[in-house]
Amino acid sequence: LGGEGEVATEGHGEGVPGGGDNGGDCDADAAPSQKCQLLQPSSPPMREAEDTSLRSLYSGIGASLLLTINPAIQYTCFEQMRQRVVDSLGVRAAKRGKKNVSKELSAGDAFVLGAVSKAIATVITYPLVRAKVLAKTPENKGMSLHATLHKIHTLEGPWGFYKGMDAQLVKTVLASAFSLMVKEKSFRAAMLMVLIFRS
Image (cartoon, rainbow, N blue to C red; front, side, top):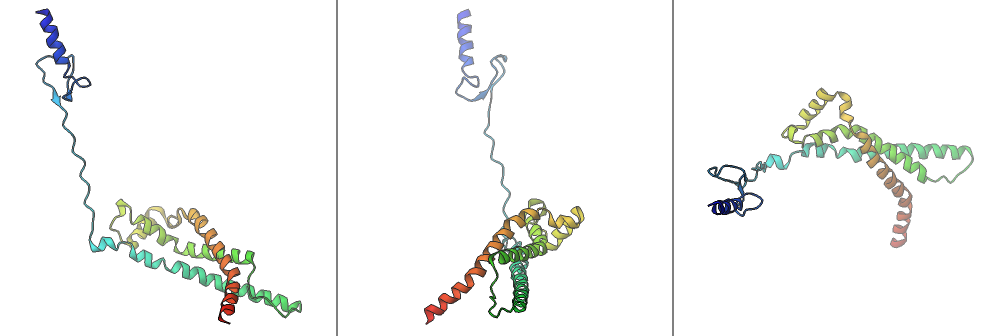
């Protein structure tokens, strides 16, 4: 009898988790009358239905349209400062008795003016950039651009509009300054090539 009891115990032990095949949540020390509870596979969490309405497809388009003024401000500032620098160089050359004055900026002047013009455009338009980014977060989903700007001002004050602008300046100012420098130095060469090919 003792042997049969040991065999039954061993047979029952084969069904415990970690050693059995049925995957039951059993305790080897539990009473024989306690039944093993099978682990039920947990159902995957329900995903929130995505909003595919026409309004959601065009969310943020207002801020994107307003941000198109960034390059306009940049190139307007660059051309105004460029013209003043060229005029001042012409006046200095005239005082020195030079007749042929180059109307092209040096590489250093073009780089500095490009950096300054892009910095001005970024400072003016950065509040729109930050509001556009925050409007896409889950807690601000569905808020308009004006409402997002008002929320930033209420919670963080005026300086909240320019939070994180230092990284934006480093990323955009240097790239724009370099591109305008290349454009300034290559414009004359490009015009000469066009005249050569036309002739």
